[in-house]
Length: 296
Image (cartoon, rainbow, N blue to C red; front, side, top):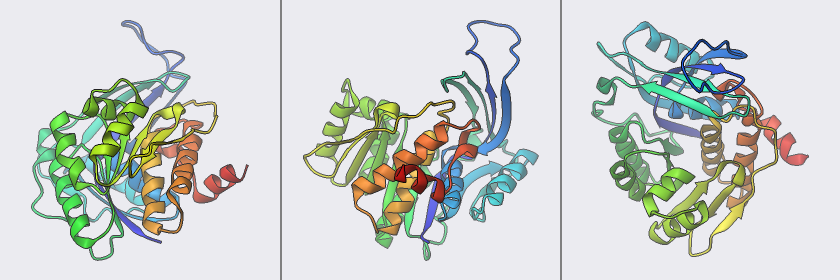
């Protein structure tokens, strides 16, 4: 199985599922609650491991007790956390997430600025078959994408919502860009995901996908924009669905055994399965579950 270097966010998330999102102040009793090590890169690494691949996580955590728990939880998923940087005196990232029955969320994250101090170099790339970066640690993402290009392996950017200068800085370095609808429209000043995909495809020399949740994704690596519908499911938790999509996409891309349409179909199915389960990345499926879903 290929090994993928995942670069970016690592946080401890507390997720509360409620009947409805609060409309004012008060005390609200959750239907369910879970505390889970997450963050974009960490969720992607854990999903890759669950899908049968190998993943190394390059992220930052404080040298506090939360950092210990973060590393322990992600390591327990089978992820190599030897590259996780522990920053002395820093507080590890954390977030509180409120979610209603349909999966809509309110997310309140906190990142200690000390966690974003630029790294001095990249982890060993010798056994890395692809690099997957998010936008939460831009200096590390840039180094990793440049290292991927030098090594001749795919460099995949999870282009989620971020400051536009960060997106513009990282996109030219990636061989493959998987952008959220919101980030793509921000970059292109367009009104819809298909329009944003068309604009990005024309201006980016590599591969582009724009994801639109239940609307599916739009993709292409030339002038033609193609559409991949999303599976029809009853969603209960959309948190980390994008991370599962990115992880599945990166793993199958690194395997280099399927055409792009099948890779995107697999990634869409994996994300759909996750949305039927509460718990953020804990709802990520196994490979057998995705293949069985596709067979149906």
